[in-house]
Image 1 (spheres, rainbow, N blue to C red):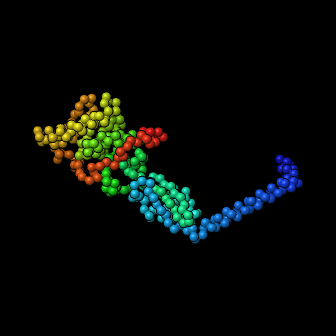
Image 2: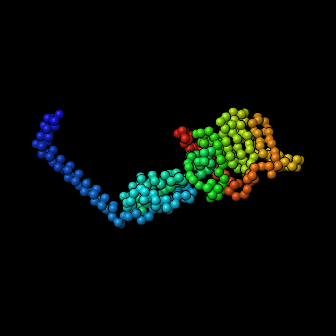
Image 3: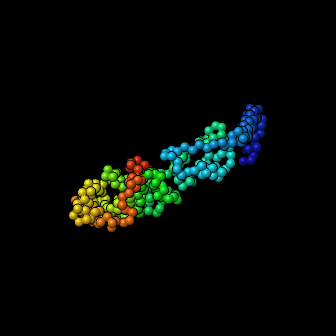
Length: 299
């Protein structure tokens, strides 16, 4: 093997054409190395020091990512000019922020960075305290939930279900809220039990037993039937027996429903309907079916 390499080198050495090509290659390598060195030197000059970072929202106005967070991310990602700051590292640091869903950025000549940020928009609260965004994704963020809802101007329902079922529960919550909205009602809680039975709580504290999906009629049809009759039913109860509110409605029947009524004073504290953001739901209007689910497919 060594002998063969030796003979090959001798052959190349005796060839003027090969020697010229080898020399030309060395010249080009030296030239490229010189240009790279010059480019690095220029990029590190004070004229290209990072002067400003412009942050643009990819959705609603940014509410949780602060200037201090951006400044800290730049320091953590490493010092450099606008041309040498490692964008990959900077993007990774910003995306670690609890409220940030995705980030993209580019350099703007000569000394600026343009950063596009999409924050999570919370729409519901999952059983373990995590939040669910408008894409049906779970994320964790330490925050005062009342303040978050006040800022959003809506109420986030609490969703409960077996491990890994948040996408399915979220999809059902959106469907139920679509039916409730036409009656000016808000879903405050939805639970999928281990027996795969659905339970919903509406504003005002009304507990609705929806049952399993295998029932002859759909839960949306049964809920619509309740809502159409609910106002007149409560008015009738109040006039006849002083019972003012339906506290529980059992919709697990093919035709009609069963109910239990109580005086308004017997309802749990805080269940009375209040004006303001409590009367609007944070749930998205559209189904999640057009998005990719946690398993790589639709819900």
